[in-house]
Length: 323
Ligand code: 2P0
Image 1 (spheres, rainbow, N blue to C red):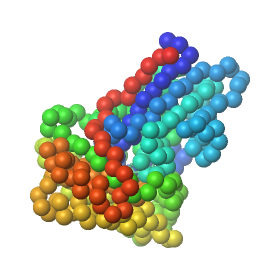
Image 2 (image 1 turned 120 degrees about the vertical axis):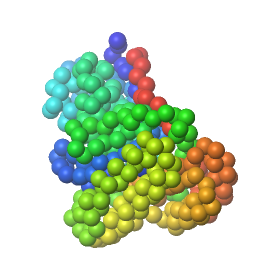
Image 3 (image 1 turned 135 degrees about the horizontal axis):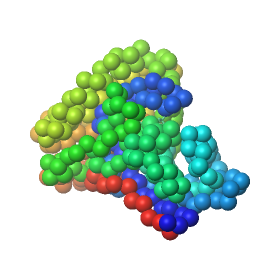
């Protein structure tokens, strides 16, 4: 073991969405969630021990200041309140995809920091502890501590858990249709607060959620693609309707987002094994059965409003290397 650890994590996309907090201080979600990890969206973070008494030195995508750097700094301070033996560190984190554009950079970023801190300071945390630590940085980061299919169940201990699946039963390709790579209009934390405070649909969103989780878990267990597709689309649209109902309203979609959604709805009517989901930004993640992916790839590229398409498989476990 050395003084530097290099951690690679993947972003994830929730099929059953988390939106809203039961406890903002502990960053405990008000809803469960279920995600798949995205092999093509990677964060690489180097964490190096610094001499005791020094301040943390942080760089995010080569920048040493800004809101992303401040969030990392707050996360490290928060971690030390719980685990005082986390000493000062130098952090160099880079995403191979746009930060803050609704592509879950905070998920892979805080998961890498939690995993790296555990290794560097020999903290001896198990996967659940690391997941809860990552959650303090970002709710979705609790899931990026693991690869593959991952769930956070509300009745659980606040940690994510991997879901055992046979990869042969779930040969998925995810196309990320990027319709705008600018930073999102309202950050998730502020948007969740506004939604909970002002959207008349928020309580019914929270109340319906356990049924969606149960349906998604049942569909995965039964290798039922259509079942997972239906509940994923419902969870996505209910979340966005709830968000749009906020006052003042929040629109994450742009015209390109709607073009992709309507196109994929048509493909579904034609019988293709495909569905879509959208996070806190205008990009659309199009989830295909691998056998139907070739049909979708070219057509997605040619849609108006789609700037680029990133193709991804399901990501594996995070990688940790000593330097
Ligand atoms: C999710 N999203 O389940 C949902 C769906 C976006 C839409 O988790 O406030 O960055 O840091 O806990 O995790 C994005 O929000 O929010 C998110 P915080 P996070 O993936």
